[in-house]
Length: 270
Image 1 (tube, rainbow, N blue to C red):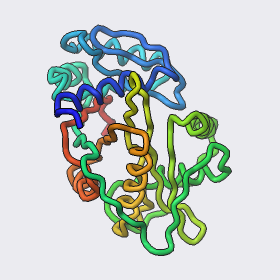
Image 2 (cartoon, rainbow, N blue to C red; image 1 turned 135 degrees about the vertical axis):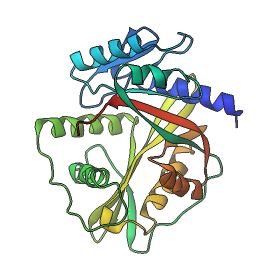
Image 3 (cartoon, rainbow, N blue to C red; image 1 turned 90 degrees about the horizontal axis):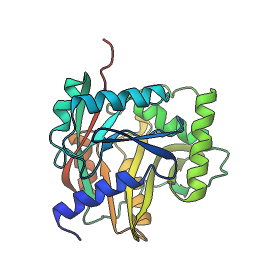
Image 4 (cartoon, rainbow, N blue to C red; image 1 turned 180 degrees about the vertical axis):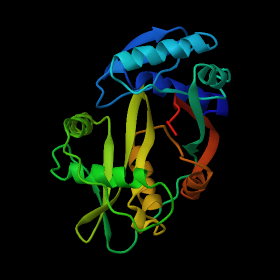
């Protein structure tokens, strides 16, 4: 496995390459700004070798994203671009830092008895229900609780997101898994492989369990399965955890903390 600096460089190359099939890249100073389909947006990121990111760069990137109807977001690895946090804050954005982990010694974790795991096909008619599992989980990020599932979203925006996901699954750019119990989807997750000059790297994303079923090992089990699938072809698998508590769960399935992932977005109104 590469050295620590090599891993971070590989992750940055992954993020630079990931938007290319879907978006055209505009520049805002030292930032690359992917402009593409709002159904599958990408954040602005520092461009390798472009120098320090400034507040004016961030403002310009936000303007380009908003003009295209895209979320105003900037993401980076602070260990590689340490000045970007101050620039984002000076531009009026709120900054959050998350643990960045790499699969170092994957551990096989079995799902609970009675739970079956499936690879999701591009033509699966239940795909909107799987997306609802994720929407419910991310709407209630706390511990296990008694909450209602979010309604199935049939808006034009939701249909566009489903269509974009189907295309990504069909092309192999997203590999999605769903855990099913008693005929109902209860947890989901994906990994997103990208070829970088003949080396495949994949990011685990969107691992989500229905809130009322947390604490049973569903998230750990589906993450373990995603890593096993990804490492059949990928030389490196990584993810960003939501917080330190979530990072500790990933560490139990063989991930090791590597660095930090930072995201800057407009502050939510009080």
